[in-house]
Image 1 (cartoon, rainbow, N blue to C red):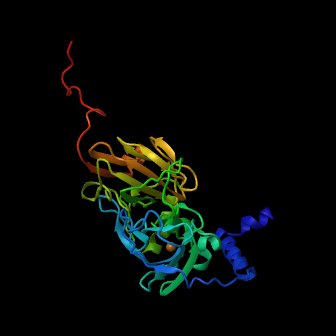
Image 2 (image 1 turned 135 degrees about the vertical axis):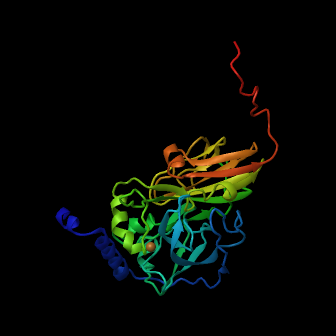
Image 3 (image 1 turned 180 degrees about the vertical axis):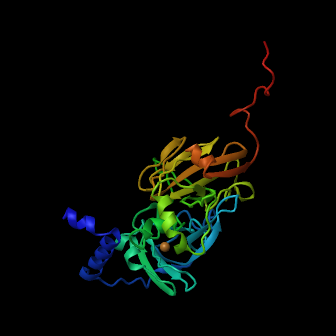
Length: 366
Ligand SMILES: [Cu+2]
């Protein structure tokens, strides 16, 4: 058996398991005709689609549409470009928000202008490789998948076409997240409601860009042209870039996230491939669903939290001082040398009770 497995590539194993899924299951019809249908507009991260925190009425059929885009994306200040594979044109793809018990329906479009086959694996879904087995689309095709959001929490979705295509597509930017809120909204461990004033979606991405003999990052004419050399860099497990929202600086300067003193912000953070450790410099995670499950009580007052590779988590923080907060991956090498730094610019009045510079830096007095 062992011998057999070593001879079969992961792609074959996945293809075989999908075949089993598709041939042995008897399906029963589901009547969703009485459900209210909504068609929310997805927004480019870090923005989050408009949504109710507490579910209004019964479970809904929530319809989304995403067009896959293979596109050149500039990922640092030196102009390094990667052939990004994207859901809806952004890295990460947009954050979907639904409530537990809702049905999620996604129309996934792979236009003729793309060069590769793609699909989508929802970690929030049950069965068929998270939908991955039912959503393979070649350029020029579209597919529609529906799944019931039975588990509340934050979950990633990502492309997983099979074999080495899986990590290659994921590290080319092809992931996003869905937040399945409890119908009563978020609560603390005593069941008291936690209402946020705004939510931001930070998708962290590791890129593996090959270099030429001069040490310059290479640019290719198409995704496939760079495949082999990128696989070599990927095999080192050392990313050339580790960034938030697709590029160094995507969440700093003019692109910084914003808040006011007294406002509560929910930060949803995902990493489809690699562990990371978000930290708000000068702030805290008042309530953190580190592993993403809203069925579990949130942890409280964390300094840094861990998002396991292949997952999304959420952190709720009420800002108490104005200023620029750095939101970082607290592997500070990844934050400063690789790019995983964002900013939150907070307006409001300074509270001297919490902190005060008692004396300015000056020469040491004897
Ligand atoms: Cu893909």
